[in-house]
Image 1 (tube, one colour):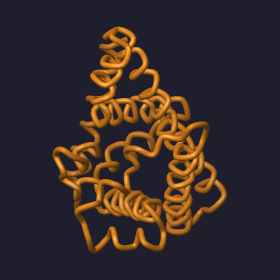
Image 2: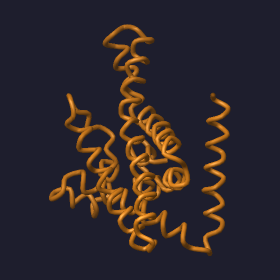
Image 3: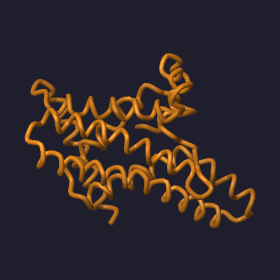
Length: 202
């Protein structure tokens, strides 16, 4: 869903809620499961958003097989950052909830640390080795002028921080509201549907 916030679809507002289903899944998974779900989600996100790499590489190499192989390798590399973030989020919430018995405090720290970790990973991805700054989640808000203005002071990373921060806030708000049974049920079905599709593909 997050990729729909980027061109050509440009539903930029979806970025503010697009990560809620993924957060729901990884919070309730083990460490391996959270990394796996993050890796798959990141691969799909980058494959759809960077689909143009295949025809570009084919033009340069003259081989469709080489183009697809190179593109898949890059998509998988970029997906690793998603996997690491999901792994960190799962690990940090387990540690914080064991250390802090107060859910309000632990959830607040999970939101802050999770948002900071996402920004750190985006920064590393931008400059590590040759760097690859495309498809940073903050770029999805280029049409949201009221928000994108903060990039003048924080760069795109400040926008990315706000997006992940809001997604985490919305998730914890939804998960603690007894009246949101329908949305909660939809997220449960999403998780089980993802598990079924994953088991069928193995």
